[in-house]
Amino acid sequence: MQQLALDFGLAPLPSLDNFVSADNEAALAHLSLWVANPMRAPVPTYLWGEGGCGKTHLLRAVAAALRDQGEAVGWLDASVWQPPVFDEAWRVVVLDDCHLYTAEQQAAAFNWFVNAQTPVQGRARWVLAAGALPPADLSLREDLRTRLGWGQVFQLHALAEEQRRAVLRRAADERGVHLSDDVMAFMLNRFSRDLSSLMQLLEHLDRFAMRTQRAITIPLIKSMLENE
Image (cartoon, rainbow, N blue to C red; front, top):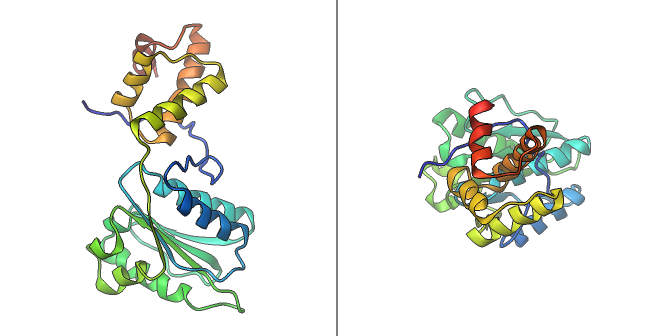
């Protein structure tokens, strides 16, 4: 059954606090420790795992936390067709979707990585990257591939079915929203299964149900899709 990806513009901003770690506690603890003390000597860090396991969530959460601290962040993902030149003001270099990089993006990522290894005014800089595969299996230029595996490497695991259900149920209960088992199954089978998308869907369903004064049912979900 085809799953639908929704864009309602209501997804909460990614943060380390709203990341459901489940089996990914070690990666979350590593990132949280460094963000809490960015003056510590940074170790290049690479996250890998299947789609929907939270890689981009964590990268965006770290970038946002550092920007809140007044730090400049360099960001490169597969959608950035013309990567900018390295900026000496960057405190951290974030490389997302590494497995999808074009030759030009790989060249930029390598340049950023090398430049980030040079401290500025005694302050070292951090490289945080993510991809679908472990570094050794990436189809990238050799010098970039090997550097992505230099430091800490964490495999992220997607939530199991029962974990997704439990998180969704808890979020619904906190809103005072009742989700029947049928509605829960429909949401998990028909829509993107990553937590950010599911929370976004729940938010929109709650608002639509309140506006139409109806309970959340499968017909309500279909009606919402037809009218918005």
